[in-house]
Length: 159
Ligand code: PNS
Image (cartoon, rainbow, N blue to C red; front, side, top):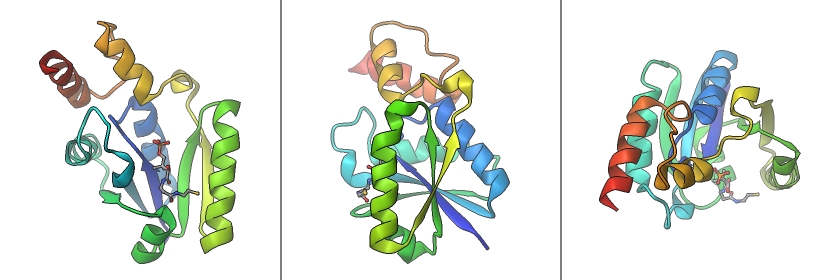
């Protein structure tokens, strides 16, 4: 059985993330979507809130689980029997850092990284841009799943 991990900050999950998760779920036996909990201190959403949104928007995918990790991703992979990390690549700007992380993770722990090209519909999309646009009244309805849009709107209204 091949279990892979889709790691990220997911603050919040976007339609671009979800596209990669869905496609990864078609290719692998099990996909663990994992939130890097140690990186999450200054986020708009808490780690638990991010996990909740991820669970809700992946609830129709029976082979997708949601979890968090602290420390090194490769340690999580070893502990959970994850053989590969799946990452979406949007543009060349993503490439240098992702390549470096992938090689470090392979060098240190033998964990492979599989890159998937992002759907061109979402090539420009990032959680940071979504938050920035939404904060200033922009319409991000087509960019995040509906449950996320509701929470984003509420969070920005209350902040
Ligand atoms: O959504 P992001 O910000 O691109 O996610 C980045 C993340 C969490 C996937 C990445 O920073 C990561 O894997 N961090 C875990 C800590 C770790 O293992 N660092 C060494 C990487 S070589």
